[in-house]
Image (cartoon, rainbow, N blue to C red; front, side, top):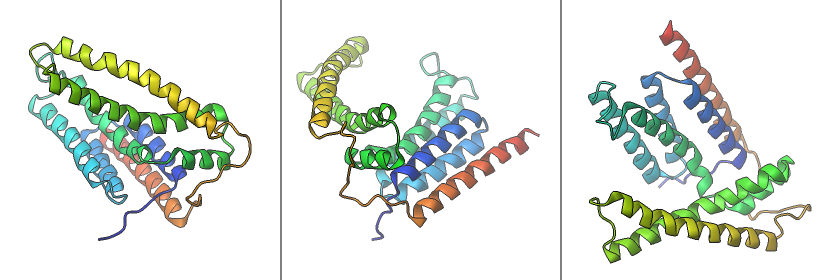
Length: 228
């Protein structure tokens, strides 16, 4: 089996920023679906096959519903704008997914190498650790509610309350614990930070940045040509 590629943190940032630009500017459905395919391939070469299939599937289901409803949406519960937003959120999640499995220590080392200000580097580093932890908390809350029989579509507002309230309390506690843990490990230390993985911007990272930029230019030109 072919080994998954691992891109540098800075290359992943470039792809995320380019995706944000495309999501903001592209309106053509066919181009959006092409971007979806490119991002799915981007995840697959990094070994994230299941996340690529899952997020692509959600986006394609939303696209199918959008097509079948002829742009009118599926009743008031799922208007066309909601489907439009789901597709673009999936694109952003696919571009951001490679960050979620990263070590915060690696992110700190890269930011220090880039001489990024702590006011930007520290929140991003906390976010990398916070999101997977909160995801685990959601899973724990759902498991507890299922055991107690409190998840019911008959009372969706009550079920939502049972989910949101404990997650909010746990998220507040987790944020305090993560901040204390990071301070204890010297995250605010102005000295040199190291990482177990060598931080090098390789030819492969240059290639993915060049390809990402080229695709972005092509998609933007395609958009302008399709308008004309």
